[in-house]
Length: 290
Image (cartoon, rainbow, N blue to C red; front, side, top):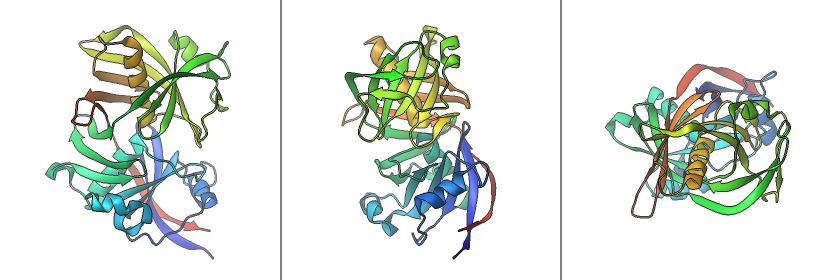
């Protein structure tokens, strides 16, 4: 049986999403249905799907509702699989809430529930800024192999609510030569997989007190994307880790889809990493969900 659903298309620095409003959590979507909507030839097209649902309407969102987050971002990768967090997606999610009148970031911070916990967003000069929370840097190297990369490279593991492996490269030419049409091979391979970032630090690294890097990313369950918000944060954290105690806490990260900002700030529970960038809604419509 088929029925029509409303949708909006949005993106953050080229990382694009199908947004589906489902305030009361009544819509059940299979992995295949999500993948069909995200298909760029036969569907709407997107790197993932954002279902906009009240936290209290989902069993996994009850804790978020109790913490004061009215809305829950049910994020699905382009293959239909569920994911913990999406740094670009959550800014696009807030932009949607603001446009339809369900949240007002000018009235104060907005809390949004995710599978990685409740995230707090505020208005910023770049658009919106999200506090991704605490992070974990693991020194155990993962060996990364990719097409176009002459030899395998060690990558550092970064957890910012979802898993990342960050690899340092020596030049923009080396970064451009990598073919991310196929997933990089990881050894050892994390049980739940990981997003993989390839990063080139600028020379000099710091400009006017801000670290600058360039990055490409392969997202698990998606492929190469023009941008990955949590990946941008992970890349900045990895370079900050490699640079040592003199590294800055502010970063500017260039991805194929644009530029994002990263900040590390002290909190009572330890350092948090914050991500800032633009968010845009492109068009809205209806589509038949088979």
